[in-house]
Length: 290
Image (tube, rainbow, N blue to C red; front, side, top):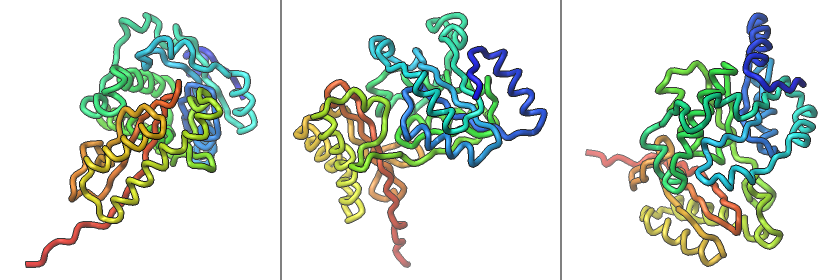
């Protein structure tokens, strides 16, 4: 496995791969890797001859710079995991390599509508930072396929919309959320949980699964379901930001006639901001016969 820190060196290596018509898969990360990231790598290896993983903590997507400065840096451990998983290249640039003119005056990309709701409403500018860095990494790597976890469902839709709107020649693949045995979605931020908080953390997933079960049993007052879930999380020691029942394709509020749904939530538990979601697929609404 090669560790490459500059755009020029990476492009030189990728040019050789393309000359051999190698199919290239790309997994962008911010490091502090866990089994969810490694699942993306495994899927990438099954879909392409070559795999590139980036490790770059992107300052543009942090609206709290203290959060950016305290984000875990575990490059040695991450490298060992990627070597064991037979990754071809790790792209590990400095901030100045990606933002050569600084972050304040850098050209940015904003995906309208779906960037300003849910997590976007609580983290202003976050998805502009995500879209900007992902677009830039796509331009640098020029992969045939890129893989993202479905735990960050809103992020996945932002990236898909960006790729569609800008006609980028890359296939976006979402990979199902990897969970602990008790249901907690794997996340780099789980390391912020205390031992006691870790015991309570699965209640976020349980709240979503309870709401899903009620919808599958016929409940259609989604606003009431959301409020019940919020109240349950508060009683469980969380500081919830939102619980929302949405259309899975565009994150618009779901209506009683919708059948392809996603329930999303974000909540603080101690110092950790946890996000999760579950999909709900309902049978088509029966049409009245004339």
